[in-house]
Length: 275
Length: 305
Image (cartoon, rainbow over all chains, first blue to last red; front, side):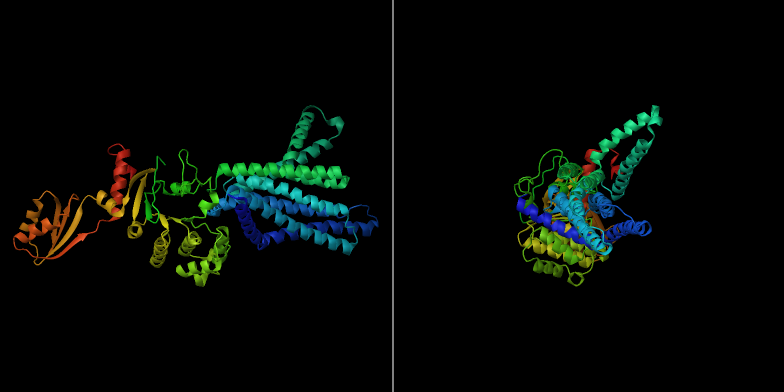
């Protein structure tokens, strides 16, 4: 297919999907939920100031924003995970492929649509935090802007990972089960790791020592696969504040996206478009 | 599929027939590049999909039996979306024209979710016709339609064919195939077992020709005329009722003149003569049954049917 035709088809696919997302209630429900959680955190900060008259933080809005982005990302990861399997299950995917849509234009279209949705979510979040900063007099720092910009790339990791998961299955139900299992595995491993690290050094021996080492190695490995680890590392990079840390985080997010998009394309081609 | 070679001529309406599970839909999916053949290749317009994916796909229109629609969209939004994908010029006029042809214009702003099965089928056909394709591929186009709907779809198919476009129809509705197709191919167990013009197929695969003759008198019990007719080798069956005789002959020749002579020799007068048209259904059953007997051991055929 010529580049011009493919670009035109991608544009049409993105427009339809984006319209469908923006007309859906789920998109706004997630934004509202994320901002509600952030508001609760901000309220706690204000309570602390009221009771203790003291609150020390160079970027007080960073953590609430991180929480909002995390919630928005989980929503996008889920949507990405079911997006292809749903179209396959409904057989609308097959109908698209009756026409001039091919593997690449379809996957790029899906990715771009999810990215645009994420950027729109980020615009909502940014406006909210800008308004909050004005109302409660918390600084809207450069770090916050950096976090917003970096999260675009981290969102890209989450979307490409979700699309990859979606290409693995032919049913929505299976996609959701895979998504939940993967999330539990990633988060569970992180939790076990933090518990084992917290055990006093004197008590670490025998089986616990072995287990701690295994979990630590696994956790390190998973941190390169889990897209949410990239989000945490991004937040760390913003905290550190150096351009090197920021650049590393950005570059790793781009590589991650490319790898998972390639894997998704390969998997999609081998699985085919039929139910 | 097993060594399937289909040759569909430009500008014809080709009926693709076969029992359930014969491989009709798989063949269509292979044509469209959705199912990859384990061996061999598919060319459309003399090219493979790899060579000119967009060019070939925009020359084909496909309507599937399964109504795979974006049901959250209105009918008009749906057709506009596909018109954009196929890069249809003057999409507003074209979509209106198709809505008019299929009697759907009044319901264009309704969501597809609320459409009946038959209306969804019409939208499938409308989508396939949007870009005025050179080859129109229809998989069970009359599925879920009422007689009015069937008539409308038949009309749009014939109109499309009149423009010199090729139509490829896979269907179980043999009466519809009989009405509109120029040639048919019959597939069974993934093998093409027959391919010819409609007339030849019927001739080749019908066991007998049925003639209905009306006399100027009533037949009696054990009528001499019936016995006389049965004495000829080419007549396989004779039955009489009131003043009508039904005669079955073999299909080797046209025996109407000979039969007229036999009847009138002894003074009987023929007041009506009707040659019953051979049905595609009979031919189809014969073809597929013969095929089953080719693949099964003797005595197994009934279980296989």
